[in-house]
Amino acid sequence: MEAIRSIAIPPLTPDLERVLIDADTIQRRVTELANQINNDYANITEPLILVGVLKGSFIYLADLCRKLTVPHVVDFIAVSSYGKGSETTGNVRLLMDTRENMENHHVLIVEDILDTGYTLDYLVRNFIARGTKSVNTTVLLEKPDRHKVHVDLKYVGFTIPDVWVVGFGLDYGEQYRTLPYIAEMKIPKKK
Ligand code: XMP
Ligand code: MG
Image 1 (tube, protein in one colour):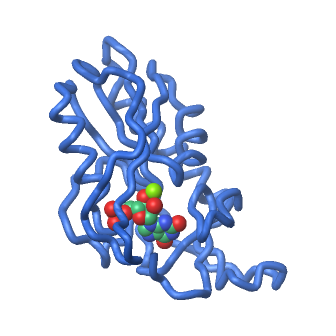
Image 2 (image 1 turned 90 degrees about the vertical axis):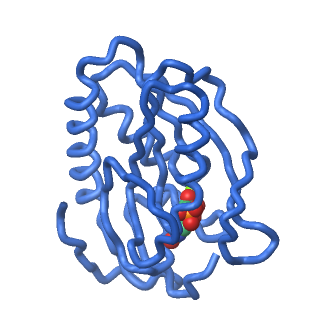
């Protein structure tokens, strides 16, 4: 895993503190993760189902799946883990289900970031209950200081400190998702 580099960014985006992970570093890491996945699933007999967790994973998923050489299909799921307040409750709600029937398939859940772990914990349990052959997880980012429940993470891009990050799919109030790098927001790190 590469060290996180800190780069000063020009003042055209005053809400951003600094770039945590630049675009080239992300691409190199995504390639490494895709290579691991290609190795690990080299012998599967039916397509791997990639399930992107909307919305934050869409850019990571798009880059990852284009580097896969193993047979795969792309699907999405939408969940919400935030009750009425601003803090994570652990109450995960299914907003939109997958289209694929996952029974007897290998599934890889693709997430942008693991924070408390509630979302992925819910999804892993839910998918296992559907009679899948296997359920694994990949996250671009994880914040170890924030974990509340243990989740087995199979492919992790980068470990980051407990700060609010945006870019490469991640947002603050739906802004900044399409930045090609991961940046730290200046504003409070709450949800
Ligand atoms: P849990 O706590 O269930 O939540 O692991 C994971 C979800 O929380 C969101 N999240 C973030 N989104 N910048 C974001 O844009 C962040 O720093 C951040 N931390 C957590 C995200 O939606 C993730 O899927
Ligand atoms: Mg998310």
